[in-house]
Length: 486
Image 1 (spheres, rainbow, N blue to C red):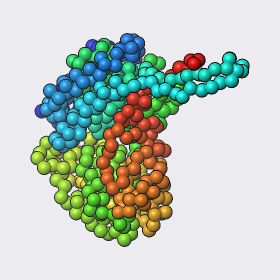
Image 2: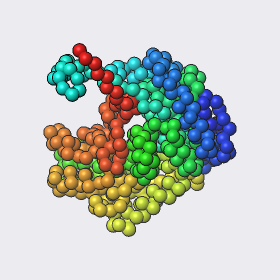
Image 3: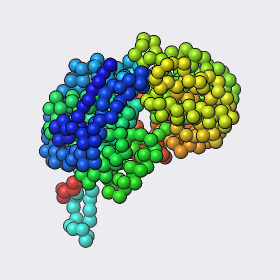
Image 4: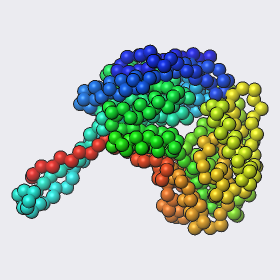
């Protein structure tokens, strides 16, 4: 059993929390993994003030030095890879393969990506403009350049489904651009973020550039948003919380980057490779136990292949091993908490009441301990059902039939969300035509794969702004125009 008791990281010092500590449970065993610090509001403000004090020096640090620190931090993570992955698995309930390959490894990779990002040009030349004489001055040829400048102090509020990739995807580009950060991890699994802070500290990040505060109470996150020293908030989480954060940011005219909920539509046409679609959609049942906002949870399938797809998805579920995420062969581990398990199960019961047919799953797995949810497939659904419209954030897929392309597009766009949608069709021209009509920040055509240099973010209630690749450097930067006479 791992028992880790970190302190808060404020201004380069490890600080005892004012509010004591709270327990972090292993979702698979329900045993205590560690004790997370409970920061006071004053300590969160102190973290933001430390970031403000460090900003001037860090923002003027040579890009090569920022890059070197990020690279060295990635080296530390690689050195400590096994214990870091064990902690990630224990506090999230992710399978060993996921903790290693998709959490810690991706966290290190993102630090390395933005070590290179720190060296990307920040100036873009603008074509010269010929101005006639007038109230603004003499006639002349005026040159201009757009310069990306750091925003300032960035609060990074991260999600519980990936305590390595998600924080690294915020902290690394923010630091590469010359910002300083206050990191507020999700309360359910914050321990890995302290390991990331340790790696950055060992790598030589200056005092105050990175600060980590945690707490189980909403007041900690609220302070990290409303502190007068904070210039920008980068948030990944639910739409409801994002809306509240946006209200506070609006009052202070603070920049926002919001990656919120999703209810991804998977549009499957009758000429699609149904087997390939099933493999893609089936990841919803297994990857992070469905706790992923990009999952294709809302399957829209043309009637001619409806029964075939439902039958194959049900068969897919039967091959999934549900159980101890540390055991070899396990595909589906627990969800993050008892409360979330109960929430997911309540949606399955709601689906029954709404008239959906439970084709597979629907019952709690017969395991003595742990917060397990059976992968569940719901058929005979309509687009007005809550199980189709609302984000469940668990291993539940709802299937809705359609007749033609126009209906498919209408159903897909009839959603409050618009993060990632998917199209499966043997007609590539139709697939791209439909993709262009979908109101989503991203569309996968015959794949659930991602290009990690492509912009990522959502339409509608799925978010504000774009990150990933070089787009993240722009997200954590402000544009300044410099103009001169030729």
